[in-house]
Length: 306
Ligand SMILES: Cc1cc2nc3c(=O)[nH]c(=O)nc-3n(C[C@H](O)[C@H](O)[C@H](O)COP(=O)(O)O)c2cc1C
Image (cartoon, rainbow, N blue to C red):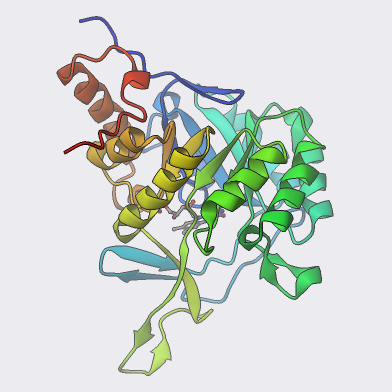
């Protein structure tokens, strides 16, 4: 059997395979070059960037819990300008597509980030809308269809690049948010971001995180993420990037069969930096075993009759 086709097209973004590494779990790419062949990845989503550098939360910022990790990094990053000067030239030498994750505290900040990043040669923008809207008393942009659409529109109007909006699971109707951001011009959605969580040290009676609360990620997220992906692909005809608790090829296959066109690997990179490479190989083997020549024969092939 000849080489199977793993190439996928997400709106205007073409990936050599559907496997990306998730924002905040792969630094700016450079940190992993000794451990992972970046040429093999479908895409690298870099750590979330803001207009100005951000120091993040007080330590401890990570705590392991059964089947997951709670992080309260606080979106620490070097700022968009330093990223462009110091990190981007290095990343550009690889075949993996460069997707830059951005966040801000007003629609204007998101728009400015999009404008600054547009001419730099990156491949796409991923918009983190799990951020407090300062003007609206700190409610997350991503919890309301109107504000989610407003942010998306601000970004899309200031860039020619493909735009993916990263959805928060902290909503009652994720389909309404996905629909709103697509109508506002997004090429697709990435889902999901972490789920708010907390852990307590019973010996000191203190929170285990300096910030008290954080975001839960890792294997415990997978069934929740899969269900949310299913809701969106069932209701809307849009490219979905599945994220949440993927640790192996079987996990990734569940998302693809459910209808995600691509996936991202997050927390698993901390356990085994080779996870993404192993997932790509595992997807290829699965397709060969099933005698499928093209990944598209698998995407959305969920069989509902028992
Ligand atoms: C330490 C850490 C930092 C993260 N930073 C970001 C970030 O800057 N921007 C963002 O959109 N998501 C961020 N995330 C969320 C991940 O990209 C991903 O959506 C989430 O962890 C679920 O995937 P996973 O279970 O495979 O880790 C972060 C996650 C972790 C664990």
